[in-house]
Length: 111
Image 1 (spheres, one colour):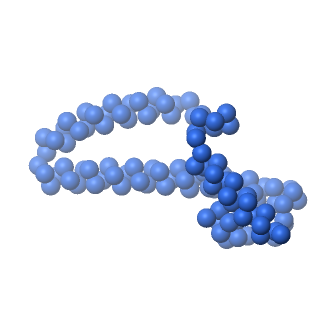
Image 2 (spheres, one colour):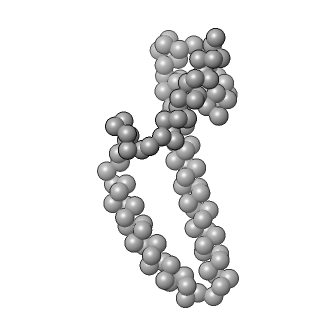
Image 3 (tube, helix red, strand yellow):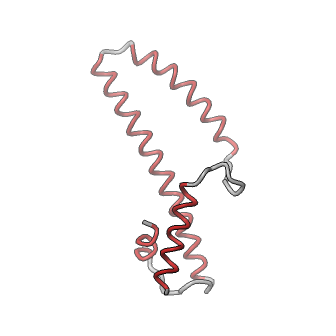
C-alpha cells in the first residue's frame, strides 16, 4: 500500500511540473518576463552579428548557445525537483509522512 501511495505522489508531482504554467498556482518571478524580453532582443541582434563570422566560428557559437539553453532547462528542472523533495522531507520530519524516507527512495518515485 505504501508504494502505491508514493507512486501516486510521484505521478502527481511530475504532472504538476509538466502542466500548463498559466494555472492559478503557478509561481511568478517578477523579473522573469522582463529578462525574457531582453533575451529575445539580444538573440535577434546576436543572429545578425554571428552571420558575419566565418562558418567555423558561427557553428561554435550556435553549439554553445544550444548547450547553454539545455543547461538552463536542466537547472530549472533540478531546482523544481529539489523543492518538492525538500517539501516531502519537511512533511516527513513533521511526522505527516513516513519518518524513514531516504533521498534515493524519493528520487526513484519521482522518476
